[in-house]
Structure formats: structure tokens, C-alpha cells
Image (cartoon, rainbow, N blue to C red):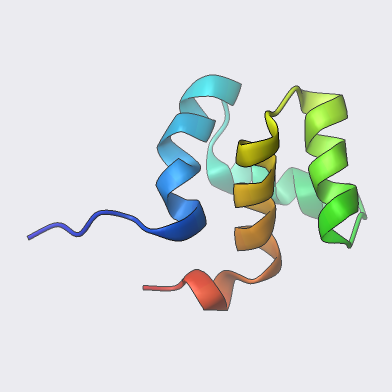
Length: 71
């Protein structure tokens, strides 16, 4: 039985489809940006990569706190 993703991971399929890169690629880009705060990363994804607010928030939450969202 497959469980449905919850929290930020539920957005990952649509993020990959809409912005054309795998989640791991986006997370690597976030590390390379040298930005550390939630607000900075969300704004960077929105302004530099055209993310919508919900998608930017979801991937940033998971990036900054992956242990919280682990299965």
C-alpha cells in the first residue's frame, strides 16, 4: 500500500513538473545560493526562478528541516 505524501513533499511532483528540475537539483541550487533563512530562500526562488509562493515555501521548509518531514 502506497501512502500519500504529506506536508511539503506533497508539492514535489508539481514542482518538478512546473519548474523542470528534480527536487535534489533545486536543493543543490539552494545550497549554492549561500542563502540561509527561510525568507531569503523563498524570495530567491520566487524572484530568480519564477516559483509561486506555495511551491517556494514547501521546498524551503523541507530543505531547512528535512528530518521533520522524513517518513
